[in-house]
Image (cartoon, rainbow, N blue to C red; front, side):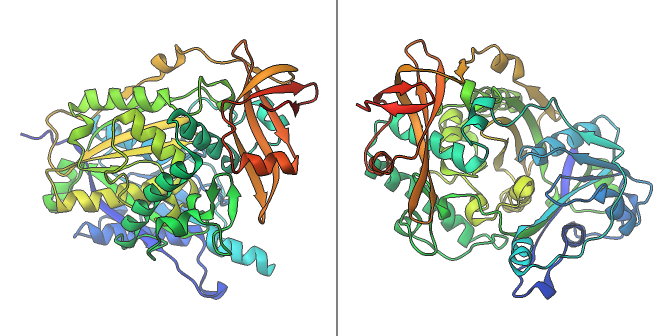
Length: 491
């Protein structure tokens, strides 16, 4: 007999606000509330939101203090606990894992999780010089789901102007190409084919932001609508943050689901969760084409649930950039040719920053209701392939109670590279990228390894060198780094 404390997801809601003019814009708080009502309707029941004991909101770019309190008041659950998170794409799965554990432990019976971003309308408003109205939501949460914070970028990266994901993930991408011994042409064809398969999933996903079909050639070929961002990525290989999207999840115990009259065919079970964080910066990791955090976290998760990669029917790998998907697939033992998303990913499904994974969980619930015997994997990532949190789900009751694992000790035991702020001497180019403004490369970022195995960052603005870097393989080349960070004698 199933444990009555077993946690289940009983309702999911996704709301997309596609607007033609700013008069139709909705603030994130209002979008959250709409997703909440959709999740309530999805349960097939209703009139129970005033019984919610905890409202949990994933942090967004908005400036609310405690939006969970407004949500709680609006649904008639004014006595509910309010919970927030820190920034990070890992937070959705982390909140679900925490909530499932608290339900199992008897600390909660009914919880609501929601989040939203209005990147599309906010972008339109900035261009128009318009300030969008927003509800005042002052105050502090009763609790914040957090963990020890590290900077996203090493001081040596910051010194070279490397501050964003669009600079780091293409460096991973080029390292993947070199590790696979692919030509530039073969590599970009393979990666664009991977992304075309993601696009095909989005076309069939009613909740995807971009549903028009695109070929691999259209995805990889620069055009007026698909500008170069960073070598080798075009716009259509980047996460799409220009979306107005919200989502909500309703979780409760099996006993509570029965009390509320929610049919078991709506129930989807979190089977297990796991987490592990890589060394905090790309600068100190062993290489750019693997992730010990994903590897060890995946192993711990599969061991807990008694499953193998081959047992997974549905998968949603965190997909901010193609390199993140390739690394995760390799570490988890998943073939790239199999479906690796249920949404279409952050490019096509839509990338509302930290809240993407709530959409992938909601879509996973829908797919598992269609095939209750199936198993689904969700991976979540915060930072630059840094914070890894995973969850396994099924439409069938679990053989054992929900469990969580932490792979941090195994990851922390791994050595870290030393990164040098200043270096002069011989080195080998490990990986690189070019950052574009229009069709012109403006700066090249190169990660180089010294003969002693230390890493150092070098920038170049040499137009001839950057042109060559976009057409020839530079990973593995010998160089001379001069004092001040310039390159000489590129082999």
